[in-house]
Length: 267
Image 1 (tube, helix red, strand yellow):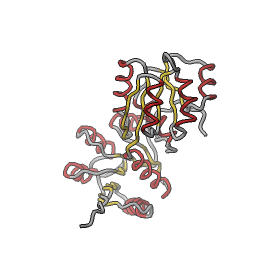
Image 2: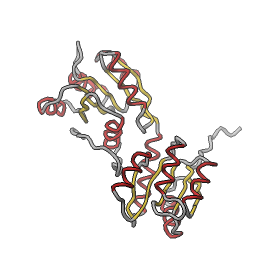
Image 3: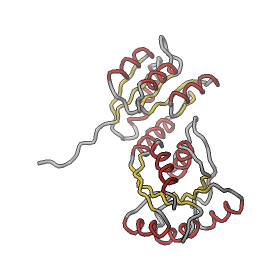
Image 4: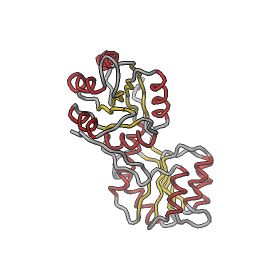
């Protein structure tokens, strides 16, 4: 019996009234070597019909299409609560359209003319976002851990979260399992987040450390950098803050609609 699991192709919709643009995006994705299954449509009405009858992983949507605009297509995706990774495209973007696209959950905007590299980066971002990552959350407050877990669950990234209630518990966890990122509270009894970050630099050098605190100052910032932390999130923080940090740590281009937070100590 053949035990090799067949990899499902990534389903991609390319909606644009220009056949040149449709073929360009299709060619750019094909040249990445990633297996994709394409649906090429020429107007917004057809795009909505296909999106209602099929599930697509990625959708490239021109803003200005006959019958129904790309913004309206995004609105339909939003109402459907679709998890399609949607990229809007146009020569320009008005403030009104940008506001609507962001509200409807568009991931990014590509300004025409864009390159094959731009299209390839979209695909790379999509595959990274869908890849599971093991994350450790360390905080002495069970209530805070619950809040942080709720925020992480709303990230666009696929995060498998493990909890630890203090620094010693965190060290035990990293000795049993490899974590891509450790979110650690700055002020904890027994072992502070700073001390934990120093220990993790020795014992878990494949883990990036993000310190969390309700306080913030230049002194804390500089101290965090010295122990190798990658970012400092001030509580309360939100899913878009986490997504911005993760884009940076994973070397992904920040999308047009994203929020930017401060980073440091990248090595």
